[in-house]
Length: 616
Ligand SMILES: Nc1ncnc2c1ncn2[C@@H]1O[C@H](COP(=O)(O)OP(=O)(O)OP(=O)(O)O)[C@@H](O)[C@H]1O
Image (cartoon, rainbow, N blue to C red):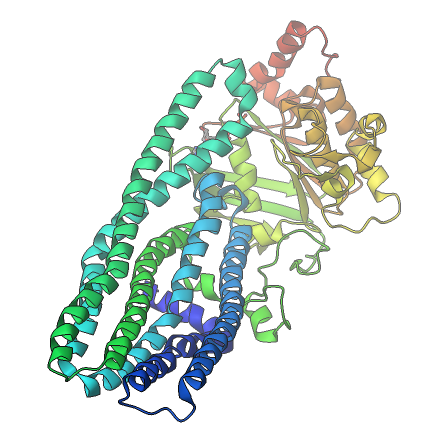
């Protein structure tokens, strides 16, 4: 889809609103035709060449009436404009967000969060401007046709000079187009860098402080801001220069009319009324031309924004952006809902979420040849085979960077696997990202995130609270003592704008979030990265005791998990180096022996750490 198609599809999203807006602004732009003629009548009446039946006061009353009508029309135009603008920008933002939520979670946006925000904010605003300014064009054409007819019938030569600015402005706008596009793209890119630098600084304040890197970070920020300033100045200068060409063309036109009018009035072929009509119309012609110039500029800038929004879609069709959808106002339409079937989030219970139908009870989950390599580094996992029987406890272990997290993410559809096959009871799982959610499976990431909300809401994430399910999940996640110590217990505000929880508390909150959901497969990514040995041991013990028939797939290098595992997979450089039980692996795998004994040396080096779990 090119920019023109994109533009038309936006107009067609709410055609009635667009047409109402177009009509309102066409009338607003054509309305000055009347006061122009009244003003001419006023001067002609004074001059005695025309006799208005209601006298000078009648003319003055008509002028006041026309001005009031125009004020009322502009108020109506503002309403239609705001209504249409809001709808298209809400649609774009809604569709982009829905698309992001459908992407493999670990690759949801191709930019930094700061750039993503600028995409949602600035690029949508830019598009909104272009579409909104397009309604001025028809009014201009209407005004130009009628006014030129009136003016030509008075004096064709003078009319030509009225329209000289039009020719100048359109030519200037065309010449400047390529430049504006270039400057706008550069200023957008520089702004995005500054926004993402701010968000990185804010999320890494502690790391910056402990590294004593404040001065260097500020210097880097200054460089980025300076780059932004330079690109912005060019962009603004170009836009303002064009705008001043538009505005000043009225002065040029007035000058030309005055010179010619003086000459013609002396020869008696041109009246004061004619002069007033020319000058009056010129002002509006130029103002309208400048509106069209603005539209052309915005349209070019929209092309840049459209390109950036397409990048956000990561290869998906640009039609995604303009698919009709419910934006929260008016009646929900069936067609729109169908267009987005399955595009709901994965938070169950929000009323809009598309929750996948429950699959048949798990007997065996098989993975064959699963491969994913990060395009940036070429690292990842290759040809991984896996078999999880119902009720089994499988541990994936391996050295740092061996591919453990990547394996879990590719299996769960959080990364798009390059190749491989996943079968649930022998049946292929076509869309793992949609399938591996409750009630099929639940997952705790290595570095979970909390929202700025109550602890209770962070665990439930929209799930209705039933019976003692929350208390059970808190117990299973070894979280009950922590909750008891919080001032407002489960109602304590946590997350970035609330009470700061420790890394281990965040991880156990995420574990509770997972355990409160009924799932057949529980997937944990390395709880040991923030839990001490004793807490992790407690957590596994409670899980082994209470999990019933649930199947577990766990990344860990702790003995408490390894010693209870039915099956252990040792990864090295993205491939399976060895597999078996702990005792088998201790006999055959060097890597496994290092991991197993590594915990003893880590515990010895850390006096506060409690002894590890029972080894076999
Ligand atoms: N977003 C990414 N982009 C590029 N390369 C990545 C990315 N994430 C991980 N990698 C690389 O892929 C390989 C596997 O990483 P992965 O995070 O799966 O390892 P891991 O075994 O889970 O490590 P850890 O024990 O530190 O959690 C590593 O070499 C890593 O550098």
